[in-house]
Image 1 (cartoon, rainbow, N blue to C red):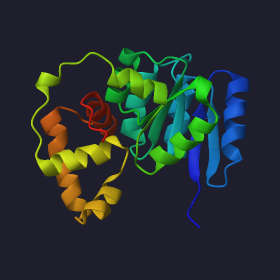
Image 2 (cartoon, rainbow, N blue to C red):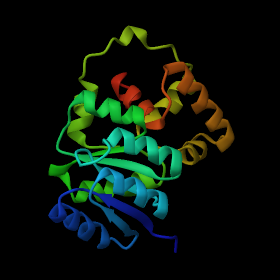
Image 3 (cartoon, rainbow, N blue to C red):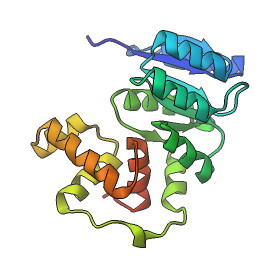
Length: 210
């Protein structure tokens, strides 16, 4: 049996934090490794515990979520971050994706959505609430600036947009994982993104979901 997914919960509301912990702890493959009530504590706990996933409330005392994301990327590079919030504003989402968030869960969708999100990002995928995906897809954007992709690049881009990790894409396309990593790296430069979550948003913006 594989090791359980270790999660750090960071939320400044004790009742919400308790409810999230209870929801996750009932899952056999997930364990809550720690809790934090503000941004500074979230950074300290994350550095010490090195969790697989950090569930981070967008609005807490202390450093803003973007600063905590930057700290996690530097000190805990293997930790994936899920943003938990009541806001589905496009500008909020894009700024947090740019900062390195791998998931975005709306508070009115927990706990079931959070469990799915934790499992998905722990495996290297990305997870966004459905209503948020609709917001991103229908956001205004200039499609004329989309660079032309080769058939193989488009194929890989569609799988990335669906949340697939490199290993799964490699298996699906009968290619080596290193080859897929090379394709993904080239794609990032071609479409002007730096993270997988940004690539997912780009793919959905450009309707690469079929």
